[in-house]
Structures are given as C-alpha cells and as structure tokens.
Amino acid sequence: DAEITQSPRHKITETGRQVTLACHQTWNHNNMFWYRQDLGHGLRLIHYSYGVQDTNKGEVSDGYSVSRSNTEDLPLTLESAASSQTSVYFCASSTTGVATEAFFGQGTRLTVV
Amino acid sequence: QQPVQSPQAVILREGEDAVINCSSSKALYSVHWYRQKHGEAPVFLMILLKGGEQKGHEKISASFNEKKQQSSLYLTASQLSYSGTYFCGTVDQGAQKLVFGQGTRLTINP
Image (cartoon, rainbow over all chains, first blue to last red; front, side, top):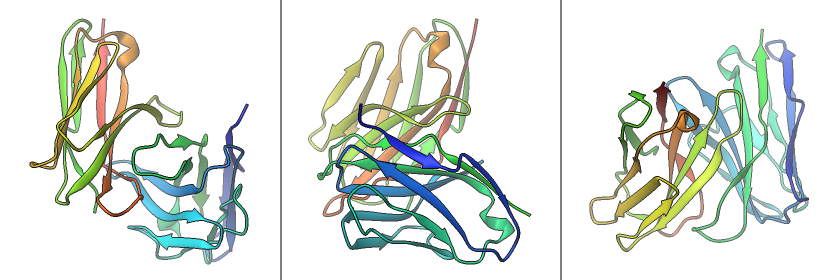
C-alpha cells in the first residue's frame, strides 16, 4: 500500500546544530507540504512543493529550507536549530489540484535544547 | 494567512450537536476538514468546493459559503469517537497550498 513516512519520529538536538527531517511518500504525489504544530497555533505551513525542483515558502519559513530532487522525498532542514523550533513536524502530500485530499505522515517530535 | 476557527474548544455530552466555524480573509477555492486524535496525524474528513456545496460524512456534514469566505462543520448526535481536534484547511483561488486554522478541540463526555 502507498504511504507517507517521516523519520525520525523523535529527535533531540542542541541549539545551533543543523537538523534534517525526512519525508518519503510512495503515492507519486506532486504536492508535498511541511507543517509545524504548536499548541494554540494549529498547523502552520513551513514550505511546500508542487513538483521536482519546485519549492515555495510558507507562512513560517524563516530558519527552514527544503529541496525536491525527486517526486518521493521532501527533506526539511533546520539550518541552525533554535529552541523556538521545538515542535511537532508533519509532512503531507496530495495529487495535483486544489480539491484533493492531503495524506499526512505520523509526525516528528523535535526538541531543541 | 491562516483561516480563523471558532470556537477554540467545545465540550459536549454524547448525543449533543456541535458546529465549528471557519473563516478566511481571502477568496477561497476549496475548504478541507480534518480530524486529529491525540498523538496521531490529521485524518481527512471532506472537501468542499466553491458553489455553496454541502457534503456529508455519516453524521458529520459541512457547508461552504464562498461569498462570505466561511465554512461550517456540523456534528449531529455526537459520539465518543468524535472527540479530537478539528482543523479546517483552505486553498486560495489561484494556488494549491493548503493552509490550516488553529484547530477546535472537541471533547465528548458520556
């Protein structure tokens, strides 16, 4: 069965370190999204991609970057981790179009100490 | 810009009804509704397209008023399994990015 997986599920890192969170989907979806979830803020869009070599900034993109070299993967990189980036991160994917269901990964809980 | 949901939290007894509202400052193409159980990923409920469409999913239905840029989710005769946090997501006209509101926590008590 097709799926979307995130790794790692949990990570603790130190302030200032570079961290990369992986997202891999086997749906062959063109659209992929990264969100962070914090209490009181819901799901906030960090970056998104409509296809290979395409990346776009979301509402809270400062301090994050993504790259899309193939259809299946959209890794999220924190260039220099900060305590404010402690959060739960969700990756999602959907087919092309504005009325298509998004499928979510199980999330990565990141703690920056 | 995130859509705004109201209320932020609702506590019901089993069998009661609830309405969750979602509004945006932008012209919308579609509205999406998701439910998230504690510690799990959000799960898709339904999508509404512009045109005032109303859709249903068991005892959960929704409406979309594109002129007012608002959507409402209706939960009737709530069941314990309906507990969770509900998110509305919106897609602006001309874009495919999906932006979510801050969520509404629904608690159903026996």
